Image (cartoon, rainbow, N blue to C red; front, top):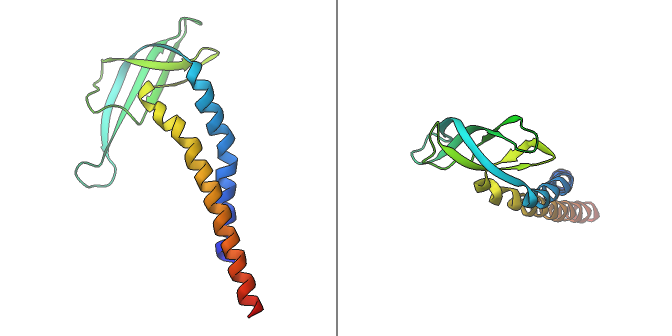
Length: 139
């Protein structure tokens, strides 16, 4: 029964996050692009093992539509990025605070697939757990 509950929880997480991931992946295709300046670039060793590094960047940019200055953070910076470099950034013209680096685009398109897989895996796990519980009870 515990397996069925775990499967249901995984399925719920997948189903609840899927609409948001799909919406962001679709809407970010039409975002405006401009140039941003990296205000801080650093790397983090995420496991203590050599070569398992995540690159971070903080950046600022001006959105021509509003004339306002906005900032962003990316955990998917490229290894060669340094503080002071100029990079391309994508942003929602209706709300420039919603922005990302184009190199993170793959992640945004990949999320719907991950959440769909989680939902289907959770349903399958839940059904298998229920079948196993019924068989055990019937025996």
